[in-house]
Length: 88
Image 1 (tube, helix red, strand yellow):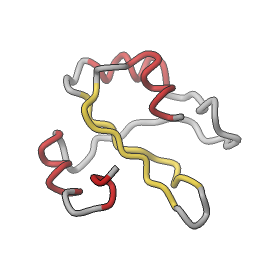
Image 2 (image 1 turned 120 degrees about the vertical axis):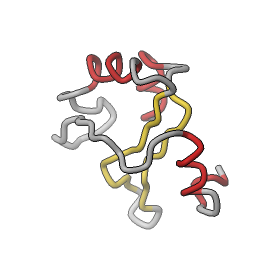
Image 3 (image 1 turned 90 degrees about the vertical axis):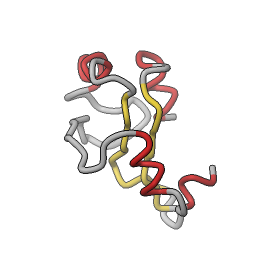
Image 4 (image 1 turned 60 degrees about the horizontal axis):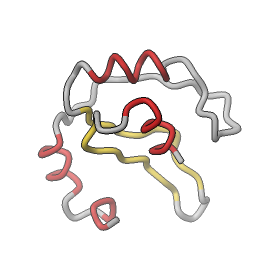
């Protein structure tokens, strides 16, 4: 559902999306990692989502962004290479 909402305005602008999920509780952790293929695409994302609630959630949490320690698709793949994240 998150991917569908992001794709409504940012389809094709990112090459990595990871929403951390707790399988036992059937809930996400409330944050995701998105790697935009160009820094300019962050602006489009920010205009649409920053400060807003996710339409599919009952939470009052609002979207915010932070600069990640790991940057770039290659680095993210290397970090998660042996994780179950890469098996889906």
